[in-house]
Image (cartoon, rainbow, N blue to C red; front, side, top):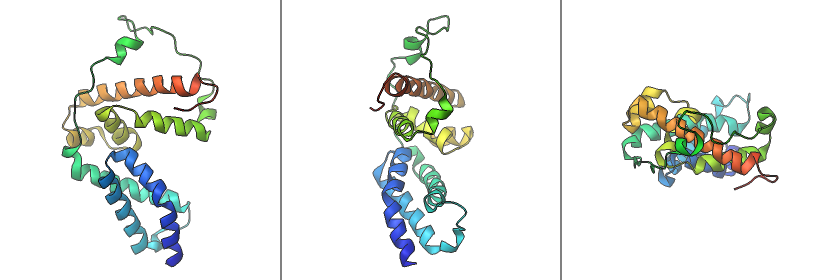
Length: 186
């Protein structure tokens, strides 16, 4: 048990970083990580060793993050996104690209690179308020459309608009900081 406590302490900061990115609230992230640690300490036998300890903890943490979102969903900032419509910046009125996207090479090879993941995390971190929340809840936590809409008090149409805009911003950020740069970084 003592060895597990030391291992958990070593993994606390990576879990906190993950939780902060998902919740964007220090206190809620701390609560989710603390609850994750308690589960791990109370039921160490449920770790079967079929994955790395960190992977098992992130699985628990994801459930705790969803609990936090459900608990505090109405408190999450729902400020209106700035209205500089990114669609107008990227597309002509007829729907064609204003500037064709640069060749991205082999995306599967890029995914395997740690630097790419670091840049992607930074791009996600810089998404505006509700766009970031919707993207995290839907794409990273895997919540269903109905649940995200209910938690944030938005319509499914609004959710899909926010997801679309988030993906466009991520594309633009990755284009700028990864695919166009000889040495990626923000």
